[in-house]
Length: 181
Image (cartoon, rainbow, N blue to C red):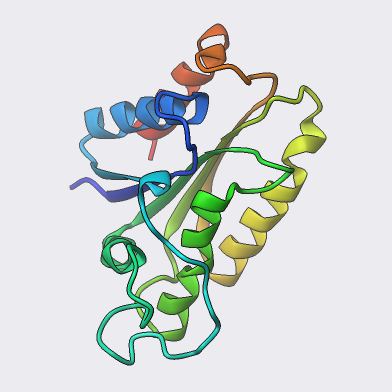
């Protein structure tokens, strides 16, 4: 039986490099028999967490009704959470970061967020691998707190213009990563 995989994309650019990586991962995962849901965080209206500590007090994950309340049930059901995103200012872009911040609601609401598997796929304009360090450190800390098992990372430097990723082997590696989950 396949796993339930939630792919959260952070790119504001449809067909951008990290979006293409996500699609390649999804192709591999589906071919391996897994059920995959892709959420383009850029298309969602998710406000940052207000730290009100009222998570789930009115039935939904967040009392400030936004699109996170649609994403939360998918997070609960997922066996694997994949973050596929470009690097912005050495970390996650706002689109996906707002969703990540609201993982707090599931954590506080004692919902099934702990013990999942996770994958990080990211691309950056910069060639120097140091560009990924802020994102990777955040990812490691999140995975540690939530007791998630890291199933792999795909960090692709030197891609900026839409389609640059096609000049690398990253899409084949992303597909293989998805198939191996």
